[in-house]
Image 1 (tube, rainbow, N blue to C red):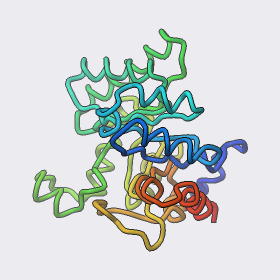
Image 2 (cartoon, rainbow, N blue to C red; image 1 turned 120 degrees about the horizontal axis):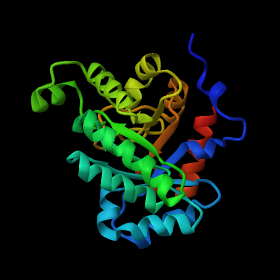
Image 3 (tube, rainbow, N blue to C red; image 1 turned 180 degrees about the vertical axis):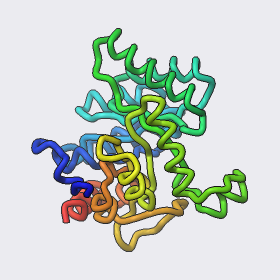
Length: 250
């Protein structure tokens, strides 16, 4: 019988370590303002395509200089050699976690895992978690079948891609709240699950199709919860983050 997620967490692992705030903003000033506003509550932040395109590696440096840790959410998807090089640079930047698209295939994911491990040894830095992106949370069954011509269910396709990722040497996967339990059953508790699409009770879904509350995501077995607009778009981001942490602890 699977253990409760809290039973496998180290005693010194703070609840705040499991909340990752998505800095999906258009400038370095806005990003650092949010990091400063959340100081003392949130230690981990996601830097994705928008901020990285606007500010580049300076965004990662700025967060780390403020004591934060970075999940580099660039979803690498290219030929294996290119992704291996990108993985090396993610290590050099000091990211604690980064991701690749599982649909890039086993060889590409293996290259990411190899490049990450090799760079960590060469630079004498901790090896980041390398996470597979399976099916984006903006997709539902109709979009998966109608636009991508994937015949299986969302859950079935997610589990297929997770299996490929594990075979390639990756550490875990990004998963919507809907697939957490299925992934836990299939992959076990050594597999890291990162969950976007987290929305506090009563908040808007925006462009997410597969969502859940923070409490439900934690109960289902998510290791990390990625929350963006409910915090970054709030009038008081610190209070919004506090409310989500309270809901997670419930």
